[in-house]
Image (cartoon, rainbow, N blue to C red; front, side, top):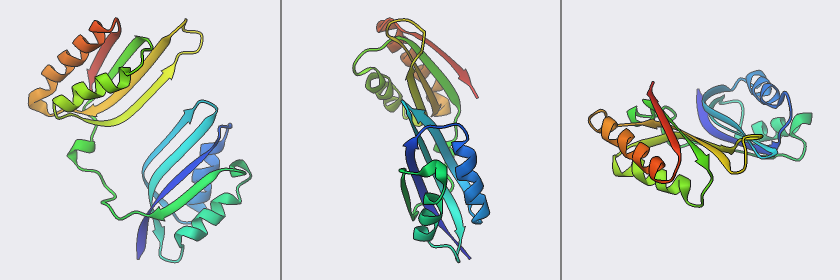
Length: 174
């Protein structure tokens, strides 16, 4: 038997961090499901749904991860995961959209509202100030599930919204 947990780690970013975390989880017998890793400023965030052997409790997993030198001072949480461990159709990425231009307050919210109006599900979102890209150069990447019957209209609305804000927008079907 096994059980599902959510593992969330926040710590300073460093080279080799993901290898250290996933290597230790493998050694413990964890099977990773949906997993996300990102650098946020000078921090790193790791989150996943994992299946643990019944012989390994969430608090033991947390303690084992805390022993890693790369995770010294990290915030680590391992908690039971009671939802389905595999996402539904709306969790599948059908399109990638990139919006680029000057950063403006509320920009992500305005674009997210467009997707919501068309019944889209934002599966992933990444945004960043582009180093060396000039004053206010900002990039947003949406990975979304779009209802097939509304995909073209949704993409046109996202492009129109970006254009009205002086931003470029490009999209691709996956």
